Image (cartoon, rainbow, N blue to C red; front, side, top):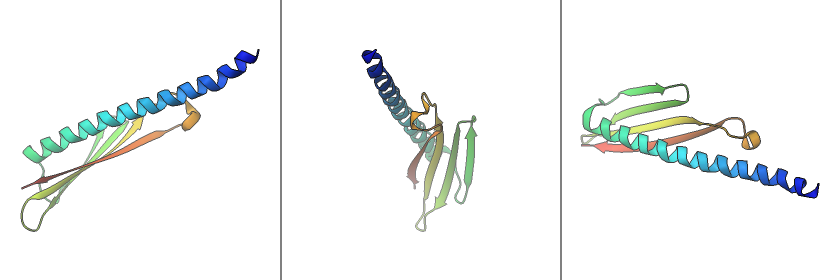
Amino acid sequence: MESALGLIPTTAFFLMILQLVLSGSWQMLDKIDISNAINRSALLEGKPGQTTVYALGSRRETNQEVVALPGGGEVITYRSTLDIPVITNLIGSRVEMKSEGIAIRE
């Protein structure tokens, strides 16, 4: 009976750690996606003064903005909002991650 009382907090702790590991993995994947998108945009597309919002599925939204620099060139910024899958509701029912990236094109 006493061993069962120790099992409940151990299980809750395990689920919270698993959620943190999953969140960290999703964050790393999102940063890689943003880096790829910025490099592609800096090489191929994007005009100054342009703001584009991409809704990739129901879990992710990406905002790209291209701003002209006074001496020539552009600054390209990406902002991404991603809903992370929730394993347990111990740390909240909705976990959202925001990432940003920037590139300068001459």
